[in-house]
Image (cartoon, rainbow, N blue to C red; front, side, top):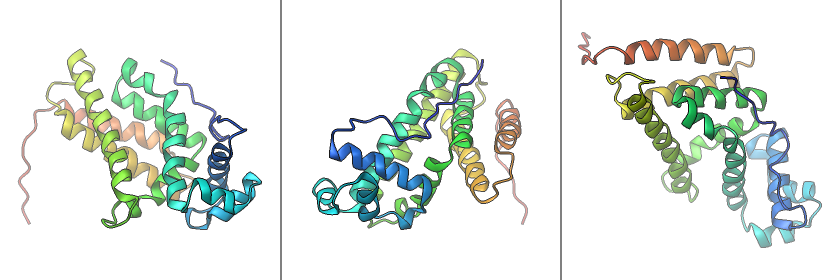
Length: 211
């Protein structure tokens, strides 16, 4: 099966006549070229060619804009990749996400910057971000369960544990690639998955640690 990489280097296609949508598009473009903490409502409004006062009518705080941008950008990227989960399973699905992120790493940079906020209990954005991460885990777990049912993955693999392990591999390698730009991310994913699946094929034995 050949994986196709969506060309989403441009902002998601939105209604250009709507100021709110123009602001979302401008925010995506800002996050492509600026670090997360440098993007403000003013910089987004400037890029959109709108007064900041008008931007604040749609998004009173930059946090409001961030949440919409993440949802919109993520949905646009995943739309072309989701069929792979159904057709080829969880491992190939996440591999396709890796391929898309290599082609355009800006969304992964943004999501990585939001991890700290997601883990900050009293931050107003935390609950929604946590829900998004939990939905992603649930998607991978459901896909692995289907993989077991159709014989793509072994019955010795518990889908809940497998999802934790596969996502840990995927996200951990993605973070490494952000700070080690010369890293062969796709090769590292393929090698890690090969080792992981070899373990899945064996009955689980609780480890005994001697410290």
